[in-house]
Length: 309
Ligand code: ING
Ligand code: ZN
Image 1: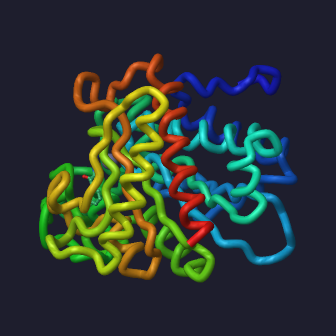
Image 2 (image 1 turned 90 degrees about the vertical axis):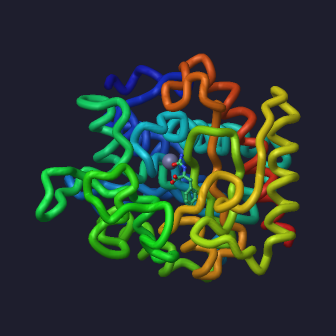
């Protein structure tokens, strides 16, 4: 990719393009963005994490957000790119974003499952899992959202490596899960919210998914989710439903949001972006802009709430 060609946030970008962009947007916005690698994927690709916020010299609370857990959920990768660009380009003009970046940091992992994402561009557009080898099976990959320490492999997950919801050979068997979990464990004193972005179904989910019991913070998580989806809907009228994962979508153990919540990150949410199934994972590029614009409002709502509570 030529350095002179602007990054296109309204198109789906492959990993090579995203990787170049991560480096260039970070160096072009050195006052607001710092970049680190939290580890490499199974196939050796660097998992870049961007910290976006005004550098103050003192410790700030943070909102962690990842995209691209599941390879085929392309709108999510597009959203993390949109979010980072929107944050740096509205700092100083949008009072809400300015206040957020002055007083907190966003820790954004734009692509979690890089190997799977690359595979969706080159071999199989509908791939979901990681690309790790499974011993004793010719089937490839683990579902990373069944691989965390939250009722691991007890419900809504499979111990068959050929399943789309294979929970892996053990908790955090996937290097990508381990890298993410290690980062959050090491930084849990500053991480106030954990947002993980999936698609599709237009839902805003919160714990629990691995059991039917309600989270200790259920009523607060519910009311914040309702505020967030009302903000989202205000832009283009897109209707979301919010609620605990187990009852709102399906029971599923080993998800990263449940794990983060039980670790102590109270505001833990899973987004399921557009649409409701007409296009599903194959959401047309014409919907990237409206989807990202409306999702920005929900993320800013949650971040502002977290900052003030
Ligand atoms: N949905 C999520 C999945 O991993 C989910 C739903 C959220 C499960 C939180 C468990 C915990 O199945 C998609 N679209 O991947
Ligand atoms: Zn998903």
